Image (cartoon, rainbow, N blue to C red; front, side, top):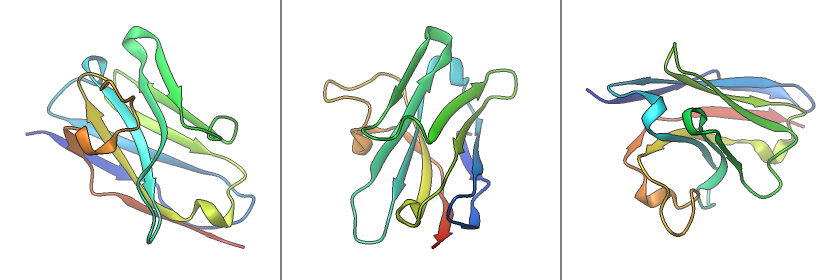
Length: 126
């Protein structure tokens, strides 16, 4: 059974850090692109970063690289998102998603992803 499970969210103050984890079951992350997205209330789902380390691929959304770092561990079949210097506007539900092949429109096309986790809430107080 395919499962993606996010963890590590919570309530933090502005300026603090969090590391989110995405635990994948049912397939190897070496064969898929795994991405982190977020969605704030009333806003569209936004791509943060995407990785498929087995082929040396790492991508970041606009303005995401710098405070956000995506990594993966093939042995554990997990993908991580390190978030530093968090801001109030980073408050959102964070999701990990998986896709076998990057669509023509790019990895941020969230609606074509094959698998999703249930999301983890990140709340940043100002």
